[in-house]
Image (cartoon, rainbow, N blue to C red; front, top):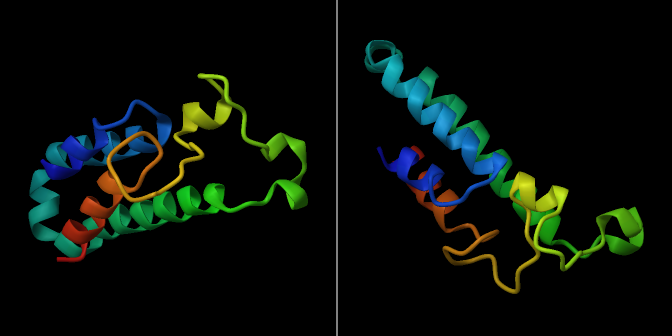
Length: 110
């Protein structure tokens, strides 16, 4: 249920993956009870990939990767569609910050 709530915190592809995982866990609840750790392993992998990609996008790589990776201030870009935003601080609950991802991280490893 917490994964579903965190997945609805943002409207982008990255957090849509959390919705897909949460709905598949609800659909396969009998398998989740039997194969508990093997099923939740996918949630952990996806969560670590989401955190890693978000932090990678925050890195100042414009000089290395060129102008296609440069920050664009328009409200809708391909990076925003996938859930990547340039922010001042990654700790928080706004768009592009890691609040929902860190919540799922703590629940997934508890």
